[in-house]
Length: 215
Length: 307
Image 1: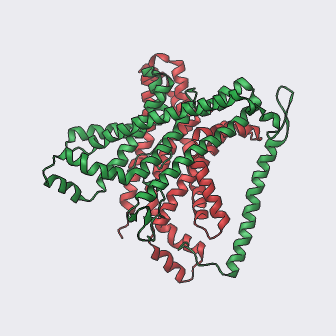
Image 2: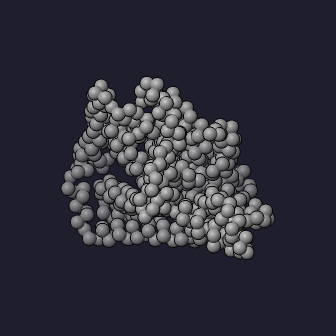
Image 3: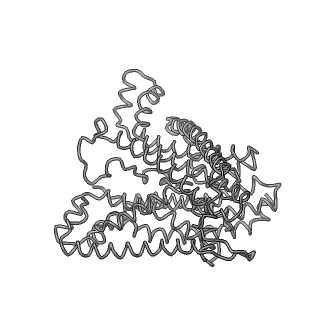
């Protein structure tokens, strides 16, 4: 136990980095994911194709490979921003298609009559999506999106393998410093992750209850 | 035809053409910039000049049979870990789905706690824990962590499948005198597996992808072989060539398995007779689309806790 107390500042530092990665990549993925979902259902064929190809590519590439690409190809291509920013960009790009798919699944879940009614009163595509479909879809997609964010929390640990000292990286450093207390250190790191994932899970449950629409 | 927009008229077609042109130019420009940056020769830190990525001298290593043997060994190691992990995950998932749906709280509650713990944990942390605490070696740690984590997810998928069955199925089983366990095993479970098969296969794609996490443990799977082992032996100037080949192999494997998941989804979708949809459905998912938002971890890999 004394090892955990001794290494606590280091782990806390890592935890804050994990939270920062979660915040940046989560916000970025929400913005880009909405855009990609819009592309995916848009009337313009090249945008649809782009969104589909982007989604399939990133969903079928291991995150480890994506982050490796950013950590090594990034500097080679002239990025001078440091590994934290590169990892944040990589996590954003990897998470975007999952958010987009969650939103698209919400769009698909809206009864057809809503879109037909919107079109029949003369709204164009942007208005149909922005005023009628997305506001209804938004309530249904909150729980799946929180699920994606929970997965993102755990995925930030992969950044620890690529020169970012977040929670997983700091736990490796802590183990190197105190090899005699491996179990205690790893369990306390697990507790840090559970604090985030379980509280997000509880929020998802509450939101689902509050926004549930009975049709 | 989407219900979200009308059939385009002349003005909308013109606008779509303009947007298309801009989009194509933007994407092509971005790709061209990346390709150009990769293609120009550059001076390394050591002072020597490294030819561009598309120069034959960056790729000639693939003429060497030994390279392909190493690539094959890497692919085999990845598949070995994924295969063993998948078997373990299916076994654990089946077990969890039975324990989790037990009618005795004394059996059910500990199972829920264990499941939530496993699902709230990064797979990477689990791998490190098993590697350091149980001294299993990298392969054992990878298989166990992938099996435990994905087993928890598959257990949850199967539980949802059992819960979604009409109540009459269970009642019918009990009413003809089958025991609770026999009803679960012979009536509910087979139907749940059949309904959930596409999602389970989709989860196995996630498992295959997650074998790349073993890179961090220095297990010689595909990514490690391609970005550490081979470049260390043949020289760092081949690193990006190896990297892009690894990317292509991963995409090929995962897209193939995703395609199988879609095929199964199309075959087993409700209202399907001999592989052809009987009723055209509107406002729901297109036939054969595996809706990953139904998976507890949204198919993202390390996973999420479903509320």
